[in-house]
Length: 273
Ligand SMILES: [Zn+2]
Image 1 (spheres, helix red, strand yellow):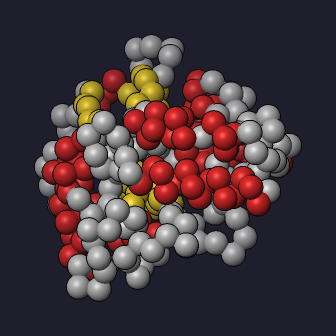
Image 2 (tube, protein in one colour; image 1 turned 90 degrees about the horizontal axis):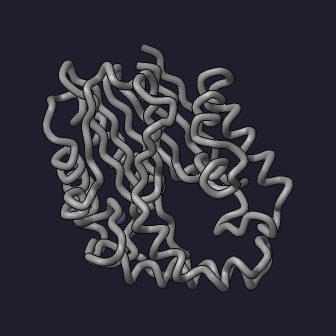
């Protein structure tokens, strides 16, 4: 077994809001959802605080037994809520939030949980084409909101204003049926995760990607999922992020690839099972 990861902040003077952590049998990747400073969130903590607290709680629980992953996530959300219920308004819809990827190997199965827009890619022993697990509900909500955003150049005042407006509009769909689900303060979100299992010997390797890293494939379309797995296997996770940054620098204003952020926090894990 070997496991490698790389993570890189999306911009200068910012905190990396992604979290990555692993044990010999489990990996956790979270991508924090930030909300505009002008939007009062009811929480005195940063998004990076939220992802670190949730990530470390989830890792601790994953080492402590083999409970279903949705139960683990619900418990993790409750634990973090208890850490700030006395200082913060947890009912506020703009409370810090995170996408979640969990992957755990037991003697009987390889189990996963995917919530919101981080991506799991499983390199199967039986098929050439990898299995890709993605939760598209957030993208579906965003697609209806971003037509105007995509027409504006990244880095412009208008783009930033429109991006903030789109983030605020997204909040109305957060953790609601018919909208999208993300880890925040409501443990119910865990029940809406995508979960699944395969026999442990069915998979030769797994990639766990925050959307800042998966964009080489699913936004820029510069590589296939198979090609991305080859980059991870041959050159490592840092090289994948290098290739993302190189592509972004060729299109700083989002003319070729319209996107919310010119550079996003990017995390890639490659686990050879
Ligand atoms: Zn708080």
